[in-house]
Length: 384
Image (cartoon, rainbow, N blue to C red):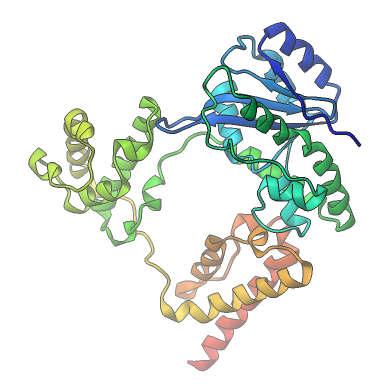
């Protein structure tokens, strides 16, 4: 089959509306985005590529004004949107169009379930399934410049030219292995997670060494992290350009209450010290004035060495299952899932599973993981 790869430029509202009306009848579309994010919090859409099997269309976000036909297309439940490693693309659509496309099919996720490897790049996937080499030299180029270079146009077109063929081959592999529903479920989870409202209340829990802080110090860190998340978005600047997590941790640990102390904290940008010192000190002072009942509980420290045998047993079980089924262990379970299981049974509790292991993963590995954990508990009791 001859795959069209010539880029077709789209920068007129009526042209896009006509194409979207036609694409509403398609079962699936190949989609990709190019964007810039060097010094902003949010990605800036530079290009939208759509492949329909007949052409590679490059839609110019800098020229198109009427976006409703595109929103309707991307939300049409009858049109599957095929993307590769879609997490950043979903951010682009949220910022540019205010939507998360659905239903979607992520070819990187599908490739892992098809036994082709975890985290496979698009160029490698094309080479693996089609034997075609595609260039990647323009990955880091400026997608906001106009006009785009011939090399950029070719690169952008090739990113969607072969995707529907790859989609068809992946569908065949997944149906043969009876894994298509697993991929659909995980892709639906990607959409659901992308649509969740911003919640910064637990951002402090992701800060390195936050577990070392006492309750009041954690309360300060929590408030500072909420401020950083809110302000970075409001000012549209990267988080670290405002202030780094390590600096927030230091402010919280010392409960800094004056400007001279704040200036001695390492790595705080001079602009932040100039513009935000008063705000930061007020955040700390307000938390210190709060009732202790409002403070968060201390975070769990890293797992003790004594939990090592159970962790090893759980990982060995998944590794053996992954080898038997030719499924990457990474698509079955995440590091934090192991930790959840181990922690759930500490201090005499009953072992339990995280939500991610209660769906289709439950009969595959969830039940086995619980059995291993409970057996370890029984053996530990017998040895006492």
